[in-house]
Image (tube, rainbow, N blue to C red; front, side, top):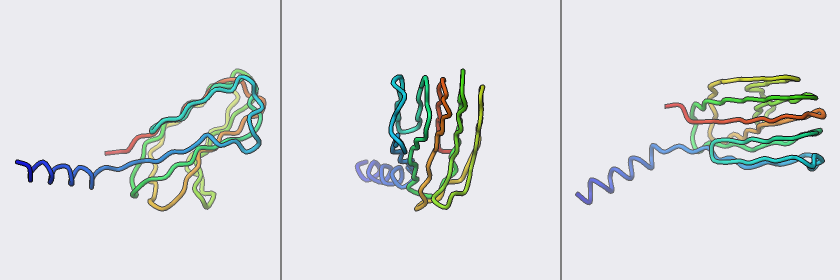
Amino acid sequence: MKTIIITLLCVMSLNAQNIKSDGTHFIDGVKDSKWSNSNGKDFTNASFSDFNGSCYVNLEVDRTTEVSFRSLSEVKKGRIEVTLLDENENKYFYCNTTDKCDLQKDIVLEKGKKYRLYFTGDHAKGKYVVNWKLKK
């Protein structure tokens, strides 16, 4: 019985895939006094009243895998851009809006590559959320 449990745990750990996220990093600092954001293992989100500048979240996978992304941006004034790029500046998805942008896309992320979710605001008031999950 003990051998079966150990074998099962080994197989589960071999099949486990993880997405490592790290952020939010500001390129020019936070100038929005009402900026609020949070990050978790499968999401990043923020709300803002005058977001003017850029920030990003780093993403990496522990093995090549397909990941499902859902990005939702809502803007009451100004403009926001959301972009997923790899280290070679290849663009995987992009949304530029002064209103609302709801985007869902499945993307193969490669082990060893670094990816960044960029958010650029132009005096934007609103919020964004990006969720990701491994495809099975």
